[in-house]
Length: 202
Ligand SMILES: Cc1cc2nc3c(=O)[nH]c(=O)nc-3n(C[C@H](O)[C@H](O)[C@H](O)COP(=O)(O)O)c2cc1C
Image 1 (spheres, rainbow, N blue to C red):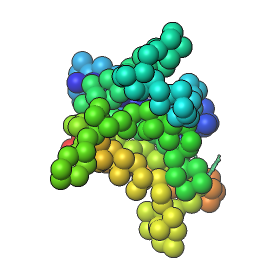
Image 2 (spheres, protein in one colour):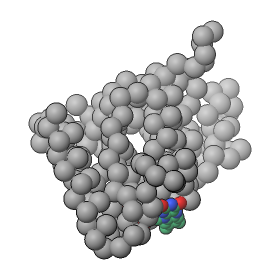
Image 3 (cartoon, rainbow, N blue to C red):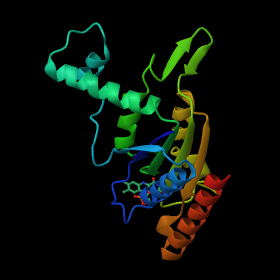
Image 4 (spheres, helix red, strand yellow):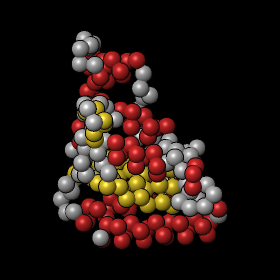
């Protein structure tokens, strides 16, 4: 059992809601799956570059590579292999301007690679990954219901991307309305923590 744990908040482990929730998820999943191996990637602390001309060249097998290009190709391969090896992917992410932080978008750009994690067939795209996903999401406002629901491009985007790569079984845990004040903050974290306990127990 391999668990890939990804965090994307720009806040630290003590203050970030998504980091605390993703850590709780991984701790409980590890207890529920003794011997599970956890690979941790903090895309906020160890930022991946935006995909540019050099990176696209590094992905092309036919391009002759110098040492720098080879190092870029090797990093891409590692990122993809890490994801392919995962039976469970846990992503902790804040909402930044209605969607994922750009650091997490960079990671997605590095791993959503045709022929590696998905492919196009005569019948359209096909995901090449299997396994289960968990999203631990945090936002200042409330998007799971109410007037802002249509502005949630965080949970919808992440479930679309994971599903596109073949991970269609995705559980979502949210701490919402964090900006509404300390009472809502505490209540949201309490609810999300209870949801995690019941999700992992089931
Ligand atoms: C750059 C930035 C952009 C944000 N954009 C949004 C937003 O679009 N909608 C929202 O509800 N909250 C927004 N927030 C608030 C965060 O989603 C909220 O503080 C959340 O708790 C952050 O997650 P974290 O506690 O794991 O760091 C934003 C915060 C930052 C720093």
